[in-house]
Length: 72
Image 1: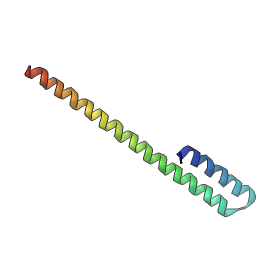
Image 2: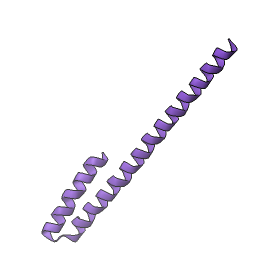
Image 3: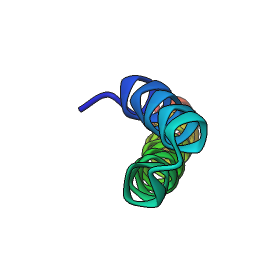
Image 4: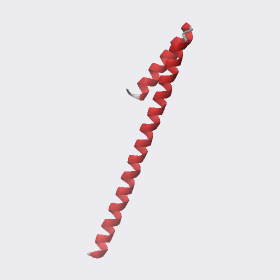
């Protein structure tokens, strides 16, 4: 599930639990929010790693091109 949707669902459940006095629903909502935040952190880390790999690949390609030019 999309972390944003899971977070929104968790917020609704937590609020509904608070309004109705249902501690189980409130806790379930809080747990869904925590899960969504963790998943978003994983997604952000994966995006950062992908970006770093692309940067390194680009730099390596530039070095290879430079070496080729010097050898020509």
